[in-house]
Length: 295
Image: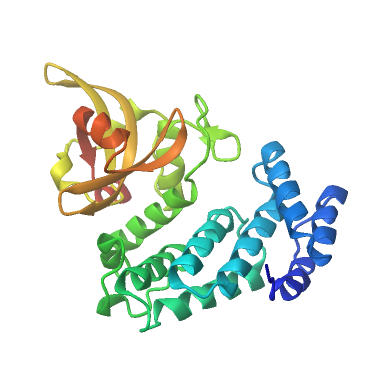
């Protein structure tokens, strides 16, 4: 397998300001000597011990990114890029700026490639919007998540919703921890929603029942929008017994996707998942992100 860009990426990597240990230096050595199989094994081993290791995430992302650049078929290229972005999303803010720019440029180039199929174009445009807040040709296209197209404009509430969804998506895969309030240590359901809303400057309590009482307006599921809080549980007469909370992630017609923190960690769920097998039948109501942004 040819890794044409790795020498360039290694030079970029060596200039980053993220502090490194001797073990992490080993990753660099494997990188520079092009021992890519050993590099992948060691980087994954690092992540089993430290799931936030920046160097390991960078190396694994860069390996798949390089493969994406070398692939000829659009489908294979997109598949490797998807794997690269899985690790890319874990990189710390402000680090690896040159690498981020390389990925951004690559995605933008393919988002505007008229030779690609509409579905593949839409996937690249979705990544462009969600990862880089880059709405190039935003109003001339239909992106993978149509509802996100309305979130990038001058309206304050829409900027809030975009921030909520972008932050929530970055937390996908964070493990569940009882009473957890921070992604580095783990989250519970209300810790997840609290953390996401705080990223948009909205303070809400770390308790699903208290969150459900932040507004007297109880919005039914069919009227909730991406970014809104949604609550689950049962009714005791007219009083709700709230047992879980999450965030509406997408709505495409009657198809709803939710992002929430369950026993398996933060997940995005829609069709053919526990969402439509269980959670959708236990929805109580929701609260609008617009309402919460005005508190």
